[in-house]
Image (cartoon, rainbow, N blue to C red; front, side):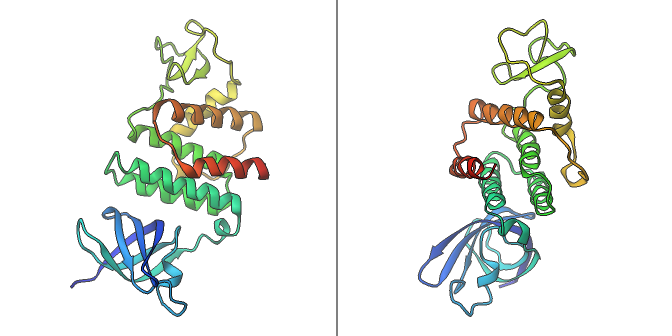
Length: 245
């Protein structure tokens, strides 16, 4: 059987028998595939170090389309050491992987891999994980089919925006405003900018706590209202953030 090389990130792992693991690897080439890592739980196994969640590597596998593939070996591209030594960052990464897995159920777009890769790399480099993940969450809404209106008023199309509302699906102008909370002007500017920014090209993030909180609150409420996603990792992340922040 021919060996196939794929670039991927392990998004989940489960035990398979006493010595092996079943991996879900998000690959650039084939999307999410199931892979068995035989003997990976043995202490002396060459696969032990490359078969855990968040491993980002070039994997060599016996690929079987639509079936369980077999891991042969892997060359790590980035070990994500900075993420793995910080419980809060690990929690953010776990949320990212679970969210991405859910988004991939709605689309086959190869853009998703590049977005996840860029996001993890920026967190590894030390950028504010809340802001970086908010950017990804905004971009994922396109693929979930519930993109908010962030170019004009979501009700009438007016460009004189004064706030943003989950109930009204995006920006709201003064004419259409009813009882929605008025957010900071900077929040409106930054929210639109984050939606359009290329994550891989970000070189600086300098936002006030008010702006970050208002953007994060809007995105969380928007996901709760429109996506129908329930992620265990998000609930755990909230708990960890309450301890660390």
